[in-house]
Length: 469
Image (cartoon, rainbow, N blue to C red; front, top):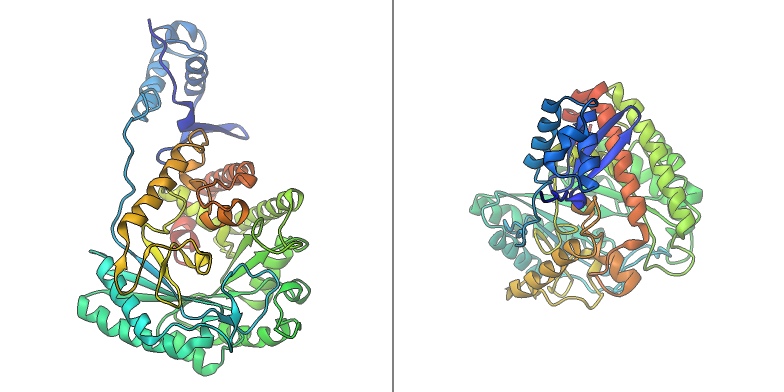
């Protein structure tokens, strides 16, 4: 008899109180494990052959239960050899083009990662012609997609508002001619918002995210004017005006979490409860910034503990049908609910590319000015060979260094730019918080199952469904 090998890299057993679940790695799906299932898995791991299972578990589990558990594991592909061929990453065309309209900014944030950043007065700016060419590229490369997205980025994109207006007008007209719809989004520091700008953005249903780091003492640590003054006092009245007048879509806050500013609960309370943002998302900085800003291992641990504390508050409110707007967790819960699985870290190169102010195509907005480039330009089009080479390397990363990690189809090695900033290589895995990522997903599984028991309707009527309320 030949021992049946269990594909241990394709599942993870998660104990949650008095229940046990199996996380199926290829599909990121969850299955309840009964006693027979756990016992069968344990013996198979020890090398027991199927013919021996019924006898080995005699007196503990009925033969029918053992055979049923074995059949279910086989159905999930956990008792078969791993396919030798690579499953290709689906390519349905571009869905998003990030248009960097300027390298300039009206702030001088001490932690800015942008390698091409300049003052607003000396900045390189995207021309209207290059912007229109970018629209044509997106329309051409979006294939059968009927809905596409233009994201405007900088520097501070509103310092080049005339070009944004011209590109939006052009995109609306050309998309209608092509039978497509364009959605618009933007990340802004908010300082150039006034009633006229807010009204125009609202009329075009921009998805807006405001970069703001928390209460004044936290925000002003790093988000300063070129003269060195904090920007919180000037920003908050504009934020309040925006949130009071903006009606087309919810407005979110993006927090850059750096060394010395890791109180997640206090930051969220201020931005959500006191200022009124619909959602708050936290982006930890662990690589690539000037000395003194990157969190060390200890602070990174503290940050993740803060995320979990906020996650428990999120769950308490979600049980009652209330969404407190915590995008880090709601995105994870959405992925678990949908069973989404990815073979590369993100959509960069697959469904998303970025355009710099010279019209060159970059992997994403973070790489503008980095020198990585080489993916084509808005006039000659995408260098598909270069993109395919990059994606092949990214997939090999997931299948190689990450092959034994059970969250590999949720993380897929981590952010390319984070790896580039820390190791000088976008194909290096973000191994500095692999274990924290596994623990975060394990935490999310517990939250998800608890919510499924307590209030499953919440998953259809909240930010978890993709609609922020």
